[in-house]
Each structure stands twice: as C-alpha cells, then as structure tokens.
Length: 74
Length: 312
Image 1 (cartoon, each protein chain N blue to C red):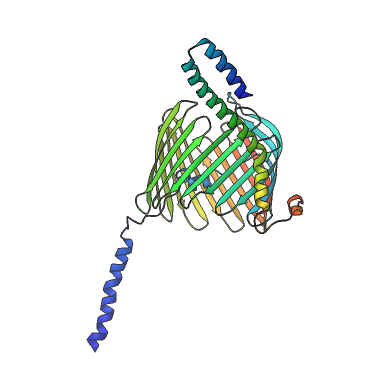
Image 2: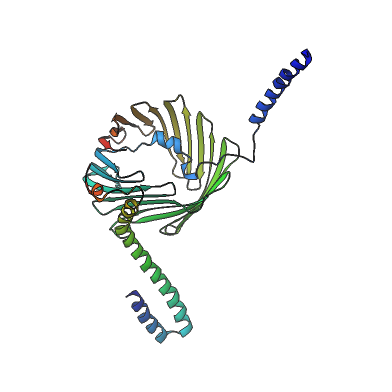
C-alpha cells in the first residue's frame, strides 16, 4: 500500500517536473517510506513476539522443562 | 661449612625486599580492565538510589530450569505523573506484569509485559569474545511513545569502548581507559537528532579496596561527584553531589548501606529535604520482605511502600 502511494506520486511528479529530479525524489522518498514501514512492522513483531520468543528459547534449553511447569503456579 | 650455611639465609633476606618492591611497582602494560562507562557511579547508585516505591508490591519468580524463569508481579498504589505545577499529582493504579528471563553466559533475554500493553525488553549477547551487543526497548501501544536503544560494546585489554544508537536519531559513543591499577578516565559524546542537541562529557574514577571516588562533567551542564567508603564488610557509606551549572541547581546527598546476614538496609538524606530508607529482609530461603519509605519534607510528600518477593 505504501509502495502504491509512492508510485502515484511519482506519476504526478513526472507529469509536472523534470524526469531526473522526480526519480531522485522518489527513490529517496520510497527508501524512507520503506524503512519507516519496516521499522513499524518490526515494532509490532517485537511487541507481540518477544515474550513468546523468550519462552520458546527457554523451553528448548537443557534440561527441558515440562509444559505443565510453565502453566502451574507452583 | 658455617659460611656455606650462612650464605643462603643472607640471599633470601636480600631477595625478599626486592620481590616486594617489584610487586608494588606498577606494570603499566598489564592494567586491569575498567568498569563500563555507564556503571562508573555504580557503587554510589547502589547505596543512594534504591528502588523506592509507594504502595504494595508482590513479586513471584518461578525458575523452570537453571537458565529460564518466569515472573509474575502485582503492584497496587499511587503512581506519580509529572505535572507542570509544583503540586505532585498521583493517580492510583494497579497492574499485573508478566515476565520471562533467559540467562545464559552468552545470551541474556529479559522481557516484561504489563496489563496496559507496555513491553520492557532487554537483550544482551556476546557476538565475539570481546564484542557484545546490548539492546533495550520500551514499547507501548500509544504512538510515538516507544523508545529503543542498541549498543555495541568492545572490551579491550585495559579499555572499553561503546557505541550506541537510539530511536529519534540518537547516537552516542564512549570510551574508558585504565591509567593506573586504581585510576581510570573516560569520555563520551552524544548527538540527539530529534532535539538537535549534542554533548560531550568526561569522567574519572579512582578506586581502591576500601573506597571509590568518581567525578563526571558534561557539556549539558552536569557535574557529578561521588565518594563511597567501605567502612567494614557490612557497612558502607556514600555521598554524592550533583551540580548543574546551567540551571544552578545543586543537590547533595549522603547515605549508608548495611549488608547484614538477614537484611539489607539502605538509607539516605538529601539536601532537598528528602529522607529515604529501604529495607529488604530475608524471612526465609526465597522469601523477602521489602519496606520502602521516602519523606520529602519540602514538598510534603510522604511515600510508604511494602512488598513481598517470592523466589530467587
């Protein structure tokens, strides 16, 4: 979706200004937009997945604990 | 024969003083590795800034194996929110926090998540023998309120250097070097892109077995000096002075730290009229009782807290 937005703006800009400056602007803009999109996705993934990741790594370490030990309060 | 018998003792008595002198002579090529730059005030912070809290706190840590443990923590009490006026605004809150820790000599993962969706994550790993990576993040559901910071630490023979990257275009680097077996000097630079601020700072630390003295100056206007004296095995006294030469703000504090067999008692008194004490009492193996109090006579804000910690 972000890439479609940038293509539309590239089309409009090339219609108005010169082609060389439009391409430079769009590569810098698309790079910034992609990196912002990547950082946002990474933040959501870390937010939901960090604690499950620790639990998975912990449950696979030696000596392997039982699943019941994970859920029981004792 | 008598002379032959006499000769060895004479040589030993002359070599002993020589050996002692060599030990006392400093080997400048073999200095110990200094403490990381951000821990330069470690002893003073441990004594003077315990984790004071207000309300009730209950922590339960359950170890599943040597390296992996889960923790459940409940907190009920007023939380202070920063306000512009001189009055402190407190809002009663209660939250439950679930956490998981994985501690390995090479990798340490620490995560805590609260009921309101805030995540506190810390990662510390050794990439090679001397290079280690540390990252920490506080993520929230509110937009633009999350922070993250990554740092790369390199440990040399008698120096340490660190490079940090944070969100909001925050860059920092610091370096600390041991100059004698007791003295080390360090410096740091940082640049904050979002606030368009940059700063440079210097620090020095002198420590022996009995005392630690540190000093730190920064271009943000901060001057911090601290001195910790270990009076005996169980008692240590600390004092600290913070001066901001831009805002002309001075705070001096003096504190004590008693580490006894069944408890640890820390107390401090401040030049802002604040007296605080923190007691951790070991009732039984794995059961700790915590009492915390902070009396701020100037603002007339009195905070008392109690808690229980179960598990290691």
